[in-house]
Length: 161
Image (tube, rainbow, N blue to C red; front, side, top):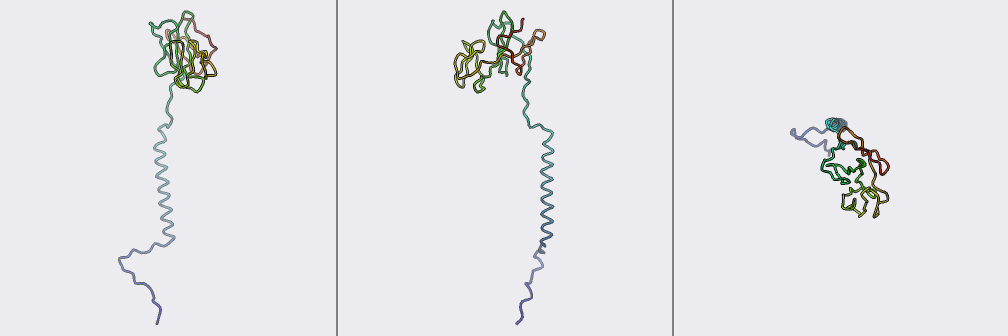
């Protein structure tokens, strides 16, 4: 008896793909996928992924009805601006303990997060805040005022009205 010469294949069966052809097709497909992902990245490139933050310098107009030594908090800012007979000044409302925004209260400022209290001029009256609230630079600008949140000045520095 002789050994079988091979298995009969149907003419409808697909041709087997040789190993080299399969590796070539796989490399073409992976190059195509890499190109597709790089195109997707390039399309997203012109759109900035960084959220814009407001400028550290901003203009503020104090209301005429603002009582002397009363805090005026501009909308969207963590700064209190004051006007008294000696001049205009600004105090940061960012707590020196952990960075919460303090709220103006009847006796100065109160931190809602950890209970620190500050006097009307920003000095610490009750901890855990380690330092007073920083005073910010104020620049007169023709009836308005420019407050620079990035520049601190010594406590008690006021701009004459």
